[in-house]
Length: 381
Ligand SMILES: Cc1ncc(COP(=O)(O)O)c(C=O)c1O
Image (cartoon, rainbow, N blue to C red; front, top):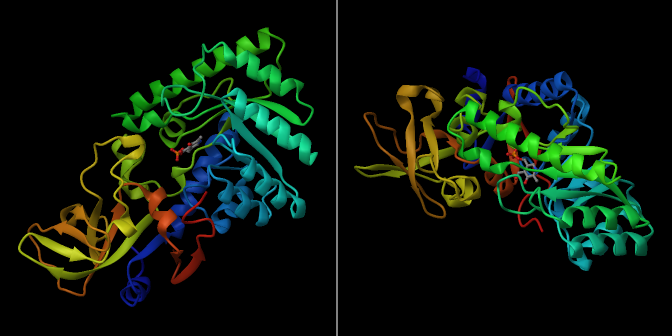
C-alpha cells in the first residue's frame, strides 16, 4: 500500500483521477526490457497504451529501439517529441494522412515505418514517399488469427506486395509484422504460449516463402502482451511490440499472464451517493470506459474492481463496478458500508482506453504526487 503521506494526499485529490504507481510502472517497464534482452529481440513498445512522452522516454532509456503507434496523431505527437524511430502499425491509405505525416517530418527527422496489407496501401505509400522524396520502411501485415488487418500466411498476394515494395524507389522493405490480439481470449498462460507458438511458426513460414523467392526479410515483428509474457522462446523473431504491459489490467490477469498486484494503473473515484444495492461514484463510462474486453471479447465481470482507498487490493474488500452510465459508476454493495465522500480506487478492465480519455496521470512517486500529461490522448486520428 502507498505510504500514509501519499494516502493523505490522495484524500485531497479531486476525482476522478487516473493514478499511476511509479514503482510498479518501473518494474513492468524493466522486466519487459530484460525479457527482450534475454531473448535477443528488439523491443519496440506500442505507445497507444500510455500516449505519454514521459513513459515513452523511459522505455527508450531502458533500451527500446523505437516505438509503435496506431494512429497518425500519435505518430506526430511522438515525432514532435523527438522520437527518432516509429512504426505506424495500422494501414494508412489516404493521401491527406500521408501529407500530414510528411509535413511533420519536414521539421523533425524520424525513421518512419508503416504496414500495408493491400496493393492500394502499398502503392499509396510508394507514391507519397516518392512525391516527398523521403524513404519509408514498410512491413506486410500478416493475419495470424485475430482476423482484423493482414494477409493470411498462405495468401498468394504476399509475394506480389513484397515485390512492389522492393521495386519502389522510396520504400525500404523491412519484413513482416503480426499482432496476436486473439490471445486475450486465452484461459491460461499455457494457452497464450500455444498461441504465441502458432504465431511464431506462421510468421516463419511466411518469412521462408519470401526468402525462397529472393525477397530478403530483415525483420519479423510480433507482439501482444499476453503472447509476449507467456512465450518461452522467440527463435526467428527479431522484434516484439507489446503495449499493455506497462500498466496491465484485468484482461491479462484473466488470461493468466499477469497478477493483479502487477497492475500499475488505477482510477480514484468518490462515493457521491448510495442506495440499498449500490455505492454510486463519479467514475462512469467517460472515465472507466464501457470496454469489457478487447476485440469484442468478454470474460471479465463488470467495468472494474473497486476497493476502499485504505484497502486497495485487499481481497476481502473487492467490489464490482457493475454498471456505468456516462458520469456515474454503480458499485455493487457487499458486507461493508462506505461513507458518502469517501474514496475508492478502481482497477479497470482495460487500461488503454482509460488512458486515452485521461488528461493526465497522477503519479504516486515515492512520497509525492507528480502529474504527467497524456500528450497523445483523445480523438486520435
Ligand atoms: C499492431 C499491434 N501491435 C501491438 C499491439 C500491442 O498489443 P498489447 O497492447 O496487447 O500489448 C497492438 C494492440 O492493439 C497492435 O494492434
